[in-house]
Image (cartoon, rainbow, N blue to C red; front, side):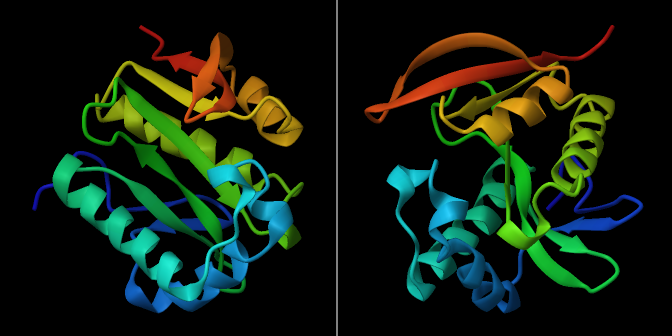
Length: 173
């Protein structure tokens, strides 16, 4: 399969790579924390089977679309600290840039470092000229990150009965 963006991306402190089955247990550890999932999927934590299913879906997304979500690893410890990636399910308009970090790795600049590199890579590969991030209005940390990434508020509407803010960034011509 030829992918539209690199399968692995590195930054100074991080490795972004495709998920593997070995990521299920550490990913499950992250997804069982209420403060990590508070603003996604109705704030519901995931069990091990649901985490396996989620990772399998991420891998399938790469095969269907040629891009997808990355397991986010801290280089220094080789620890899975979250996920970041691009999402565009069937009949979805546009491509969403998403991120999620374990609580111990928040507020250290990791999300900004990974997001900046991913957005630049996406635009460099001409995958799209516009990305959106869909953020719950109470998720102040993600709103702050979107603003720091030079995203602007495009729209506000409900998705699956949840209020959502649509932040957008466009490729510089």
